[in-house]
Image 1 (tube, rainbow, N blue to C red):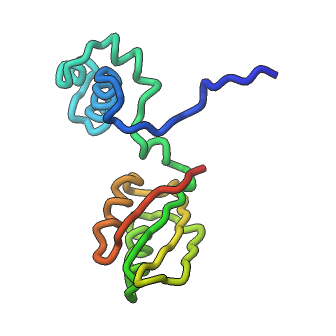
Image 2: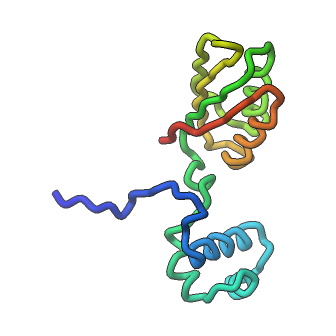
Length: 149
């Protein structure tokens, strides 16, 4: 059977993307946020042609769209202090993340690690914002996505 890679995706840093693809993503964001009413208005704001937008529009989308209605697993590295993990879990619950699993290791040298898997179907925030909010919790040292399905 012939296999095609048409539905294969990559996570790529925006720093290496061509300008036309970045601007296409910006147009889609303007339209989604209702900061532009039409494609014409949005492409004029970011300085891209309509033809370039239509060429790339179906192939570029923000990471949080790819993680909607998925299971996302991430690690939280935190100081070994009482209450930090609880605050992280409360933050996840606040944005309606459905926690599926929590695995916590034994703290070593004052540092604790937890791996959390959440279902994102009912998330009222995007996953990037959630991870940023977790990172802002005092005592959280690092938050990193390790997988999604």
